[in-house]
Length: 573
Image (cartoon, rainbow, N blue to C red; front, top):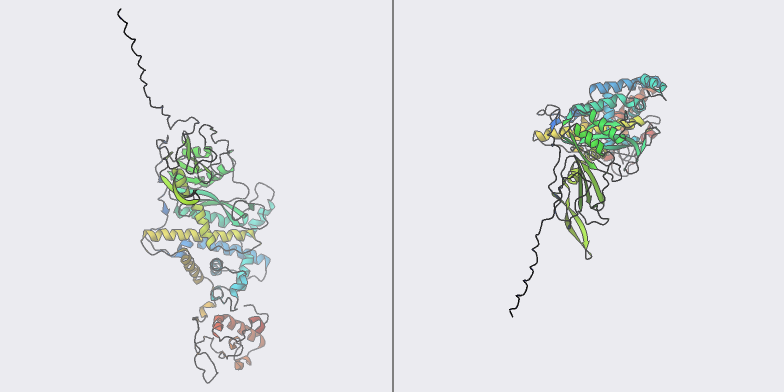
C-alpha cells in the first residue's frame, strides 16, 4: 500500500516589525514628553515656536542718547539727572521751609547745594558711625576734605531744612488726607518725577530687560513702608524697577500701596504694564521676570505688543497645566527635563537641586547648554555635566539687571539714620543718578576705545568736581598739607627751639613750640592787646577755620593735643 506523504509542516508566519508611532512633540495636548533614561541624554529639539519670532526694532537706537563721540566728564553726566533747574528747585524749597521755621535761617545758594550733595556722596564713599566724626580733628579721623568743602554747622542747617517740594503745596496736600486726592509721595514728587524722566530720556534699553522689586532700607513711621520676608533688606520702601542687562535703571516707581487702576489680572500684571506703558521701547524686546510676575495671561498680552517674556513660575497657579502623565518623579536624576507646549507658551520643568518650573514665549524645548554639578558616588565627590534648558540658561544670564543696579547703588550707599522718610528716598535718588551716570560713562568710553575708570574712581572724580563748584569759601585760603610717614623734623632755629620750619601755619602766628600746646590756636600777644574782646574772638575763630589741623599729626609722639573746645569753649568747629 502506498503510504500517504506526511503533512507539510506549517511554517510560522513572519512577524513584520513596525516602528512605534511617534508622538508629535508640538502637540497641544496636556501630555508631557517621555522621560530621558539618562540625565545626560539630549532634550527634544524638534519643538517649534508656533508664532513668528519678533525682530528687534527699538523706538530709538539702543544705548546712550547723547553725543557718542564727545568726551563727557563725570560731573556733566551726573548733571543730566541733577540739572541746574533741579538744583534751583531744591534751593528754593529749602529756603522757603527754612525761613518759615527759623527767622535766623541763612539762605542756601546753589553752590551750597552742590557742596551738600558732594558731602552726601562722600559719606557713602567713606562711611563713619556719626556725622560729626567727618569734621573731627582727633588723630583717629582728621579728614581734611569735609572741612574744606562745607562747615559742619552749615551741613546740619541744610539737612534740617532740606525740602524737595514747596511747603505750601505740602500744606494743601495735608488737607486732603483721607480722600482719594491725597498724595502720599507729595514731599518727593518734583524730584521723583524728574529723575524718572531723565532715566528714560538719556538712555534706551537694550534687547534684554528685566523687572524686579527693590528695597530701600528704612524704619521710618510711614504708612507705605513695606516688610518683605525673603529680601536681605526686610523693612523699607519698595520700588518696582525696569532695567536692562547693563544695570541701567530705565524706569521705576515707588510703591505707596497702590499700583494704579486695577485691570482685574492681579497686582503683578499691573506692575509690569505700568512700567512698560510709560516706556516707549519698541518691538522685539525680551523680558525676564520672577515667579511673582509670571502668568500665562501676562505673557500672551505681551506678545500682542511684540514683546517676548520668560520667567520662573509657581506650579500652584491656577493657569499652570495640570498633567499627570509622564510627570517628574519625586527623586528624579539631576538634569531631568519635562516640557509641554500650549500654543505660543512653553512650560518646562528641570530638576536640579530641586524642581524648577519655567514659562516662556521665546524659547524652544531644547537644551544646548551644560552646567557643572557635584555628585557623590561610592562615597566620593565628582563633577558631572548636566544639560540645562535654553530658557533657564538665558534667564540666569539676563535676569540680573536689577540686581546689578542694586549692587552698584549699595556699594557706596549713604546709610544715615534719619527721622525724615523723604531724605531716605533723596539719598536713593542720588544713588540712581550716580550709577546711571557711571553706566553712561562706561559705555561711551568703551565705544571710543579709551581708558575707563572703575566705579570707585568715577565716584571720587564726581565728588571732587561737585566740591570744586560748591561753596568752599574758606577753603580757597587753606594751606596745602602733604602728610608723609615719619617726616623728619629739622634742626631748631634761634627764635624757637625744636621748631619745624616746614610746618605750614597761618602768617602772623607764633611757631609751634614742642612740648606745649599748639600755638596756632592763639594770636601773637602784640596784636591781642590791640583788639577788643569781641573782635579777638572772631579773629580766633577765623584762624581756626583757615588752619589745617592735620599738621598736628606731624608733632612728635607724647605731646598733649587738647581739643578745640577746651581752648575756645563755645566755638563750634
